[in-house]
Amino acid sequence: MRLYKLPAIVLLTLTCCQPEQEIDWEVDNIPERLVVEGSITDELKVHTVTLKTSAEYFSNREADVVSNAIVTISGGENTFNLEENPAGSGIYQTTEEVRGEVGRLYTLNIDIGDPLNNETHFSASSVLRRGIIADTMISVLYDSPFIFNDVDTVILANSVIGYEPEPEGDYYIVNLYRNGTLLNDTVDEYNVVNDKESGMNGESLFTFIYIENFIVGDTVEMEFRSTSEAYYEFIKGIKMIANGTDPFGFSGPPANAVGNIEGGGALGFFNASAVTKVRARVIRQH
Image (cartoon, rainbow, N blue to C red; front, top):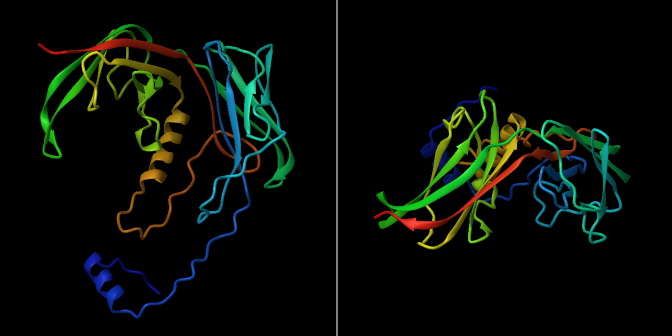
């Protein structure tokens, strides 16, 4: 049987003319998988890895945590042990403050007691790439030339003075804080850029424009975390899942974003980053 695409108005008409009936959705039975979220940076601090399990597509409950796992992060001659803290939380932290080194490959190893998707060992590797060198930042409010929701607004221009290393091919997670609070803390606001498309490559001054509710005197902080093209693509996949791509909902849910966790079809990402932060007080254009 051939399947033809029908205009939306035709589909709506056909739907309205049919008697009401209960639809029994049939979905594939997908085994539980391990879901990993973790990172190591060049900051001296306690680093964290979170372990959970995947849930069924129509599930409306919190994902189960994975407890009592053996978790380590190794790089070169160093191996950092992580302990579950608090017990039963699925949150694993390094037993002391540690830092990663730029240029080094770090490997996350996870061993669990009860198999998930017939696997008990999982791993992921990530190179801690160089980061942006940022010295200072100037944050200025300007009158916006645009009107949003019939309201005049202002824009925040953050001009960062420093250096973005050449050659091209560097990727960054860019976080924005207002008075110590992270603003892009949801998936649809994740911001990962590359030096080529953003025009930063080899530059000593780069400006980021935001439409946010800043006022004069606010403290604004920008945080740049070096990352990989693989993580860039992973975030694009996550955002596609979160936002959807079909306004009529006929295409079904998108596939899982492809992470870097190996073993048992595990989901998620382990990322190594060099971190650079700059702060400024917001001023107004005169």
